[in-house]
Image 1 (spheres, rainbow, N blue to C red):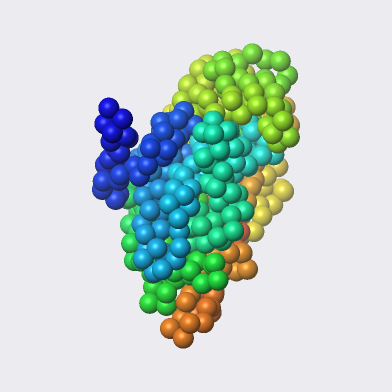
Image 2: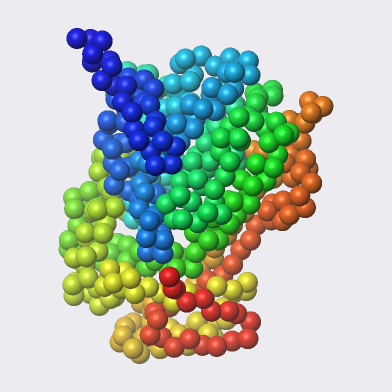
Length: 428
């Protein structure tokens, strides 16, 4: 009976990107079954991106399973090259990558910047893995060390979080697959086969250098074509403003429809220290998913608060902000004119116009030198940074941070033309 029970935990998952993925151990099977991990089935990997690319409905659960599969491939490669990795370390690395996103909230970063303040999803993930470690009698101790970058074998930490980590390898390939943006496809299998370790650091053999160049360029293209697409920005900013308004109203005593878990965060200002010291906040957070948020938004579309209902109606109907992107900040005169029009149109207070007209910045830095550099193992056994080892002069440009300014306002507000900016309207 026991052998049958163990066999039943060796499940196979059919993944559309990699094919059949085998769950490698009983412990990992039990972790996948845990509510912390199952919750990821109901959180989309790309937030509001499906409003631009309709196929982008894949979830963080998809990504976690795919990343675990790639981690298994990477560990096999390193073991085949003579690097000592025990069974316990292998299982711990697989667990660390499986669980690396369990601290994400609904719609990912939109919630992180509004309802939950001052605490990153990485910190919440660490707290949740700590809880799991206690629940599983300390069997996740090494996985927690790897996730927190505290394990003595640095290359295991780097496989989970670094500039050439398993996380990025999976999400670039997966996001490309589900959005249909082919520029994001990378040679993950070749990159993994080229992995090696020198002085406990992860390196890539020189013959894999062109695959790394393609990886970096693919990442840059995916940021501008998918993650920072103008209409994705319009949708995410609209969601952020909805959550800001709901939180503002709730903290002043207005009762809004919300599930118990969601209401907990609407009606309390919860700090990072609160999360760490009071387990109720983590428990409520672990019950939140996309459904809590969007169900509330559909109800709020009929709320008597003009600002909240207006914003919610627009998100539900995909009637998003107009977004202007420029290399320089919009002028205060331009912003004031748009705000005055909104104030007059909607008969609102001057302070409330920031829900209808506002500015922000977007940044993209494809490769950060000096921060966990991608290292190339040359044929003469020296190790060089990819930016030095590559003969592609374009890579130097990828090390520079690109910052653009965005101006968002409701579509019916007439644009104020200027000479030094270009207008990009949300569109398919």
